[in-house]
Amino acid sequence: MCETCGCGDTNELKIHDRQHSHDHEHDHEHSHDHNHDHNHDHSHTHTHDSVLFTHTHDHGAKKVISLNVDILSDNNRLAQINRKSFEERNVLSLNLVSSPGSGKTTILEKTIKAIIANRKIFVIEGDQQTLLDADRIEKSGAPAIQINTGSGCHLDARMVETAFKKLDVEPNSILFIENVGNLVCPALFDLGEFKRVVVISVTEGEDKPLKYPYMFKSSHLCIINKSDLLPYVDFDVDKTMEYARSLNPNLEFILLSARTGEGMEMWYEWLGKQK
Amino acid sequence: MHEFSLAIEVINLAQREAEKNMAGSIQEITIEVGDLSGVEADAFESALELLVKDSILENADINIVRTPGKGKCNACNLEFEMKYRMATCPQCQCFPSEISGGEEFRVVSLVVE
Image 1 (cartoon, rainbow over the protein chains, first blue to last red):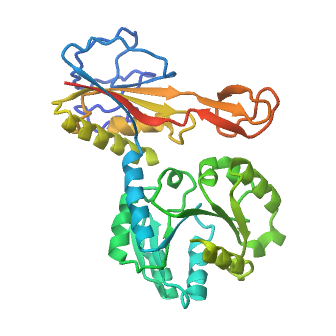
Image 2 (image 1 turned 60 degrees about the vertical axis):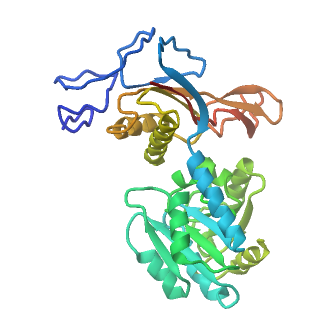
Image 3 (image 1 turned 90 degrees about the horizontal axis):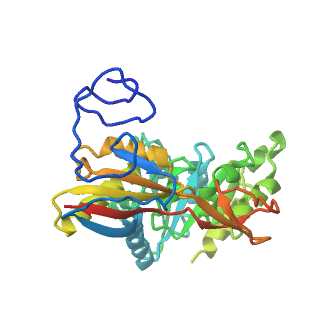
C-alpha cells in the first residue's frame, strides 16, 4: 500500500495529491475528453475557492443538466415520511443528541421508570457497537431496538424508518431516538423527529455550544445534566446558556441530575407539554 | 465523518439523474460546498475520491466549488465574509450575525453523455 496516498495497490490509484510527487508509478486511466482551459496538473477531483469560477468546456454532444439539488434532500425526504408516520400515530418523537457520556441513557432509564405507567415509551438506540444501551432500556421497562451503525457516526432517516417499523410503536406513545454520542455529525441529519434535545453535562466545558454550534442551533431543548456535580466543577451554567442562546435564541433549558432526580420533574413537565 | 455518508448520497443522486436522463456516462459533476454548511470540504473530497470506484462517477471530473460564508451584523448591518459561524462583526465586534450565504451543500450540475 502506498503510505503517502493510501491507495490499495499499484493498479488502483484513488487519491491524487497535487501537493506532493510519488516516487513510484501507478497505472491508472482517466477517460476525460473535454478540454479545460485552466492550467494545473490534472486531477480527478479539484476544488475551487469561489462559485464565481467559470469553466470553458467544449461539451460537443454532451448534455449539461442543471440540478441545484440539496445533497441531503434524500435524507430530508425520508425524514418527512417519518415525521408523517409519527404524526399519524400521534407519537411524540424526540431525537436525543450529545457527546458520549453526557448521560442520555441514564436520563432515559429514569424517565421510563417515572412515566411509563402513564404513557407508553419506545426507544431507538444508536451506537456504533454493542447492544448494551438497548439492554439497559429494556430492563427499565420500555421496548427498545438497537441500531449499530458500525463505523458510522450518526443515525439517518432511513435507519430510523426501518427501526420504527420493526419496533411496532404504538399510537399515542413517546418515541425516544437516542442518537450516536457525537455533537458533530448527527446535527446535519433530520430523522423526522418532532423536537431535538441536546444533552450536555456539567463535567463538560461551558463553551461547548460555541465549539459545536450546528448542534445547538438545530436543537429545541438543552438538558444540562449532572447538576449534583456542580459544587465540584467550574462549570458556569449561566455562561453556557448565554453562549447557546447567542446561537439559538429560542432554545429552552432544563438543569437536572438524572442520578439524584433533581430537576427531573421539569423534564417530565416539558414532555407533558409537547403536542 | 459524515462526509462519507454524504459522498454516498452524491453518488446515488448522480446515478438517479443519469438514469432519468438515459445517460450512458457522467463526464463531469459540479458540487457546491459552503464554508458554513457543516461539511468539511477536504474530507468530503477525499471520501468521494475513495468511493467513486465502480460507480457512475468513476471516470467523471469532479469539481468542488467552495462558497465563502457571508454574514450580516445584527447590530450595524455590515455585510462581511464569515470565515466561521461564530465570527464577530469586523466593524463593531458584535455577535451574533445573521448568516446570509455559505450554507449551501448541493449538486449544481452534471455533464452527461
